[in-house]
Image 1 (tube, helix red, strand yellow):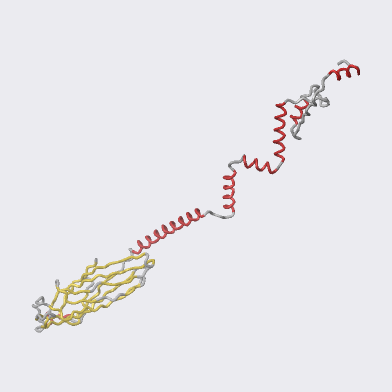
Image 2 (tube, rainbow, N blue to C red; image 1 turned 90 degrees about the vertical axis):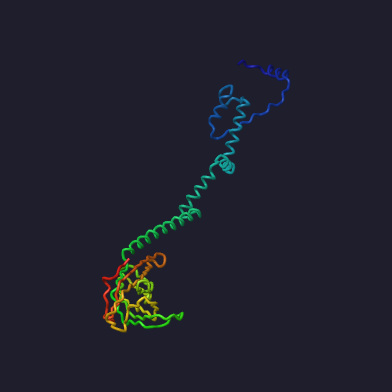
Amino acid sequence: MHAKSDSEVTSMEQSTPPRSPRRPIYYVQSPSNHDVEKMSYGSSPMGSPGHPYYHCSPIHHSRESSTSRFSASLKNPRNLSAWKRLHRPSDDGDDDSDDGQNDAALGKTSPGRNVRLYLFFALLFFVLFTLFSLILWGASKSYKPQVVVKNIVFESFNIQAGVDNSGVATDMLSLNSTVRIHYRNPGTFFGVHVTSTPLELHYYQLKVATGQIKKFYQARKTHRTISTVVLGSQVSLYGGISVLDVRGNREKVAVPLNLTFVVRSRAYILGKLVKSKFYKRIRCSVTLRGSNLGKHSNLTESCVYH
């Protein structure tokens, strides 16, 4: 460039029309943005930072301004936290999962989970209790009570004329006997409550005497002998035993009879929740002989048990 004299510079200033003052160009630089700094220096016509003229295009100015505003917003902690909330849509789910993990770590469970646990343990208890009860019930069936009719004693036997309740004249029978029964409970873990149907003596279809076993409780692995009175008083015969003549020779009297009854045993294994029942149907054939009055008639081989 050629050096100009002072006169030439003065003439040029006078000939040049006045210009409006140039709007100053402002540049905001982020402290960490070295590339922007290099770009600003590279835009100088002389390629040196010390040149008095700086050239920035509008596009560069717009980008630099937006970058500077973004950097400034990041420096504000309040704006940074708001930006994080906007750009993390899944934070709610993560917070919920974190809360659930924290609750689990602290030993807290939800109500729904507690209900499921209660139902599970209730069902498990019911299944185990049912299984245990079935095992006990099945085991009890192998310990059936033993009932044996030992003997019968006819203590008295009499037939005489009489009148029934309707006023009809007929022969009347009176009979007194005692039946001895042996009962044993072989159960090792339960006792039994014992009852029976009435003990009945029949002459074919005619009932001539009856008796009742008193209800009793038999403990486990124990036994007893039961004596029951079977009695008939003023039983109308209506010619059923007309062939008998006890007035002639009583020792020749022989009357075939049948003794029938049912023994019921009930075991409460687990209170009244688990019960086991046993039935023993007994039928014995016995002959009433005038010559054996007051003597024991053995029935161990004369009875049938069902």
